[in-house]
Image 1 (cartoon, one colour):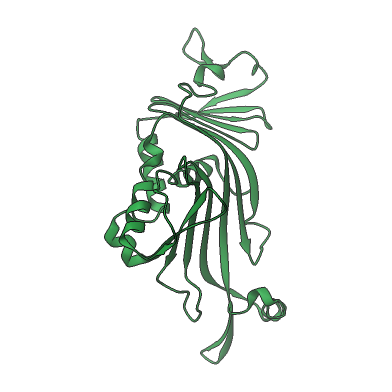
Image 2 (cartoon, rainbow, N blue to C red):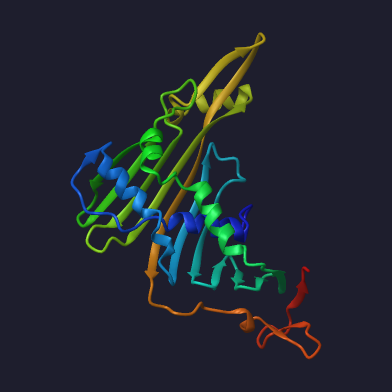
Length: 279
């Protein structure tokens, strides 16, 4: 995956799953009820077991050619099992070992799991998700909920802080879900920040109406400084969500086996893979 590691992708997935159990509502804005609903969403991913198929897109504007990727991911999250498949790679984790499978390079890497993996998964999700306390949500965001297309509702949070020198808010988070079943359908996140550009890039962007209100030309110590508001966008669509599957698509023994001397060997069907251990 282009600049997106399996662990990073998994982190995003956990963030994405904070998107259900909302109550159906008519359009409202910036109310305590909306904050309560959104705060409750943060616990949804703890419902185990969980299996999801997700189409994930990352992109930036202006496009640097390095921050864009689009992929399909399959995720399973259970009490002591984790599985992620994306871009020909797999990550399998249990209480004792983490198995990384690269089907393109025909390599299997094993890492010890000291029991901290799932804790780190949750911590990583918490770092990316908006704080779930009502007080902090109200301090940081303006919230609203409205009906989208028939049968769909959407919660939107907009940060109260704006990008310096502009009228643009720093962050927008929106969650679309089925109003009847409360199943998440889509997650959309925009993170904005100022980045410097050279005068040529600035002039080119100034000719594009899409960048109106996103360009700053200022002086620092008599030097012209050109800035643009960069947007990092995460756009995800849930294609399947289920709590009924009791086992992950693959476990450790489906990829590696223990030999007579305790060494790890490739399992049947993966005999041509190189197996390495990182301990």
